[in-house]
Amino acid sequence: MSGICQGRVVVVTGAGQGLGREHALALAAEGARVVVNDLGDTAKAVADEINAAGGAAVADLGDVSDWGYAQELIARAVGEFGTLDALVNNAGLNRDRMLVSMTEEEWDLVLKVDLKGHAAPLRHAAAYWRERSKEGRPVDARIVNTSSGAGLMGSVGQGNYGAAKAGIVALTVIAAAELARYGVTVNAIAPSARTPMTEAVEAFADKMRVPEAGFDVMHPGNISPLVVWLASAGSGEVTGRVFEAEGGAISVADGWRHGPQRTLDRRWSPAEIGPAVRELLAEAPAPSEVYGA
Image 1 (spheres, one colour):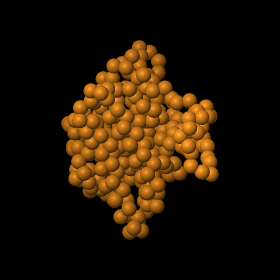
Image 2 (image 1 turned 120 degrees about the vertical axis):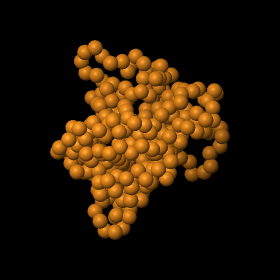
Image 3 (image 1 turned 45 degrees about the vertical axis):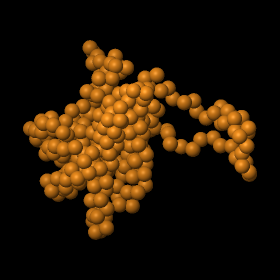
């Protein structure tokens, strides 16, 4: 196989189904050697599919939100293929509930799997690349994280999921700044596609249906070319960015920026705040529609 990821070693988390499976297959089709992570036997099935097609893949089963296992996962990639070039953080789940009825368990589980499940592999991959850099060895590495429109613009009934996905955006921006010195870029995607997770959300059911004919806009494989490119050596000038993707559309999220400002050379009085805020809101872009509202 040959392609834009030829010879690169890539770990994909949550790759047993949905988006992660498509990413792993697409990376392998472009020449990457892939470590397919998930909790169940689906990871082995994806690795077997890649190998049967002439690619190179191994399955590694474990919970990426476990700090120790995340370290073992990175070590497995290096031990199996001799190096690590990219980490695609995709693992996640949801437990949708309105805030007034959400349980502590539902909050903790989503933050653990979605946010810590990004932070743990990222931390250990970053440590590996930092060590290589300090040894004077070349590093041209990539991290691709997975956020969501729920994290960028909110989503009714997904306070836990949206908070985790917003945290992933902040983690991406911070990691991009911290790891640039070691030759590592860090970006995130906010995909919209048909997966077991999105099919289970009632508000998305109609949108996720497979069309009888024409372009299947919600097919998860539509997202993977962006991930493949971000994981490739050719994307080295891009870091700290969040890309929204759906069907044939790709955009750069224009968030996390300072907005209009009013300044005094003294402390504001409470009575002055209201008129100033209303002026600022009139100048600021209109807020995006909240998903599911």
